Length: 210
Image (cartoon, rainbow, N blue to C red; front, side):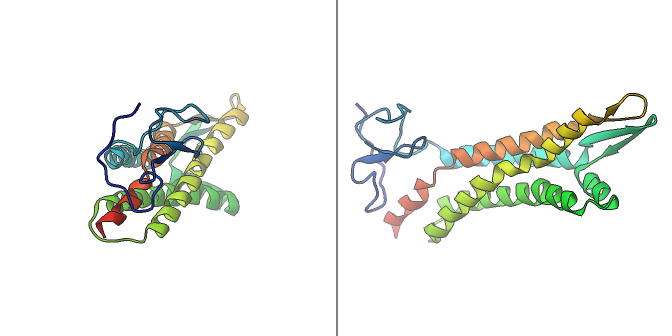
């Protein structure tokens, strides 16, 4: 049996009614249960230190984002001449070859989406801790959008992986993965984890302080 918690919850919430929403299968379970009755996952009223964990992962992802853009994400060797390319360099390369759609996809997925997701998660953490009342419906919608688009940041890594696998013409042309690819993959994974660790229910708990 779970010990009683002294945490105050928003009026009219499931927790106030003695129910907990499972973050795995999203079914409601009685607060007296330690595990979900449907998927057997461990359940807690709120994710402990949710904002702190989210921020720590977010800061780490931002630090990795710097070398991900400064160092080459791939190196193209043509007739013995090696030419490294950063993420922006890859976008410029596709533009110079007339591949505007691919260049736009890589720019959006590799530049705009990661930055937008990091700023959105930072804003959610601020909203969860600040004293000002911010529209919780809009914040929840922002979180859902952020969680959905986050995984599409891997497009750039997939493009590099496909090019490395397909373009290996011995002595003529080859493509090798650069150090930035690992850093960028780390950025995507850490931002996805930070979004998973953010408990949107704490946004609604603030209602009791109105």
